[in-house]
Length: 241
Image (cartoon, rainbow, N blue to C red; front, side, top):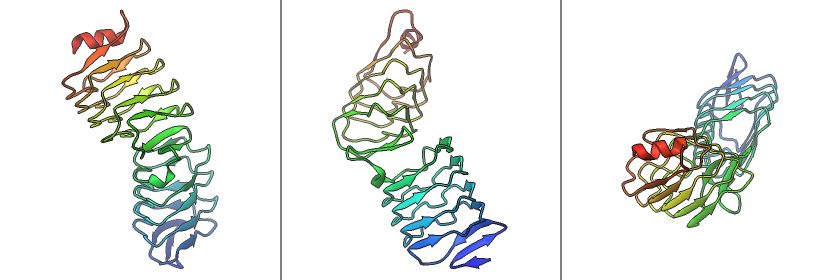
């Protein structure tokens, strides 16, 4: 069935080929396929019915004019690239039922940033578009997305909130001006390439709460000194480096 540019098969939106600025998906639709609205540059807003329980990866990627969207309560996961490069997206309503948002789902959604440049959804920091030299992450943040600060060209220092427990894959990869960081107590896991190619990084203070550091977490950081409490896992890791 085709409804105003929507191709729907067995309750699934397969593709949108219309040119409307606003689209209403009919009630009863249960899924939106991967890439269904990809690169629909004219789309400004869309109404998704409560019947939808699944949205495929990259479903709205490249919708450069999309400004607002509400995720239905039945959706539990936002997959990779779902809203990637939706540069005008400023209002995204995510229900508590969503248990996971892929780190790439909001890549390039700079208009979601608050006044300080932070893209925060459900207490997870997905991006930073500010230009501060010292960045202080809000205390409401309890998790960082992968690649969250990767390639930042301005940051020389950062203060992370106590609630963060994992420094994820490539979180600070390529932050070439970052010189030092005090990892807050409560962090237990520093993942692969978390600080890779941080050329200016000279001092990292690690807490005794750290239980795991990937062997390549600090890859290609040639001037680095690790500081860790005596007898801690972090100290044993530092001695191997």
